[in-house]
Image 1 (cartoon, rainbow, N blue to C red):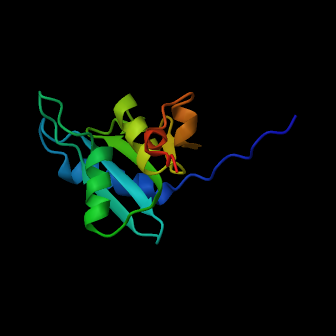
Image 2: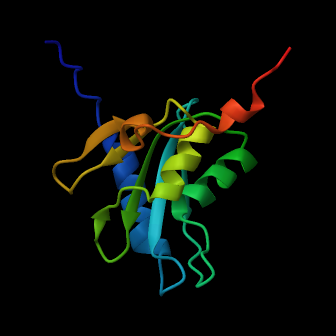
Amino acid sequence: MTTEPPHPVDHELIRAATHVARTRCQGDNHTVAAAARARDGRIITAVNAYHFTGGPCAELVLVGTAATQGAYVLDTIVAVGDRDRGIIPPCGRCRQVLLDYFPAIEVIVGPDGRPRTLPVSGLLPESYVWADHQLDSA
């Protein structure tokens, strides 16, 4: 039986998200920060926009922020909670969006001190593939 080697953890991303959570998440409107590594190596950060109607999570804000900066391929992402809550795994909606936009993206999860990196498909097994409805019938 072969086992896949563990994916390396991008500690610089964790530090970037932690810094944003500590310095930009103020009050109840912004409680989670996210950081992602773009294909060109840049780190892009964002915070959530909490609202009782279901405002976007930090990961979703980050997808839009990345696009505005010309980063259309993200390799790795992590979310960190305010008040030193540490790494937070993406919610179900974010997992589906990340899979749809970046099927090869890796997600950092796990408690502080023991983070690990997993492919988004590992967080959303047996998932719906949004692109399937766009198949060419030609």
